[in-house]
Length: 145
Image (cartoon, rainbow, N blue to C red; front, side, top):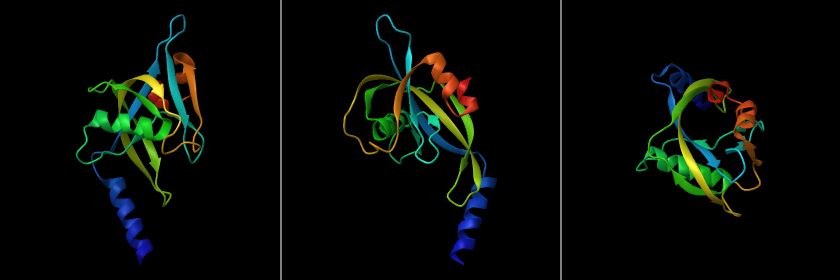
């Protein structure tokens, strides 16, 4: 019976409008004599190249959630813009195997530094890519644009 409730809850999520919402940080750095670089991380489940993102947190503004996810997933410290620079849509696979549509609002975050210790350390790879290479490597097609 518990499995049935879980499946029904997942079906409700699939049919719900609008799509589920997440917030992401597009972490970047500018170094003299170098092109703009974007920090990509791997997803924990499949190893795809992604940007830090997460679900809304009650009591936190969207850009604060994006900055928090950047720290938790990649150890990023810096300044996150308050207004989103864009959004993308992707299909998220739930634990049950069902997929739901998620809209991700993206916030630019200028990186001041990376902390050596953070909650998801060792669970992901972190690599700085020149921005054109980052666009080629990122897994979500709608984020590439």
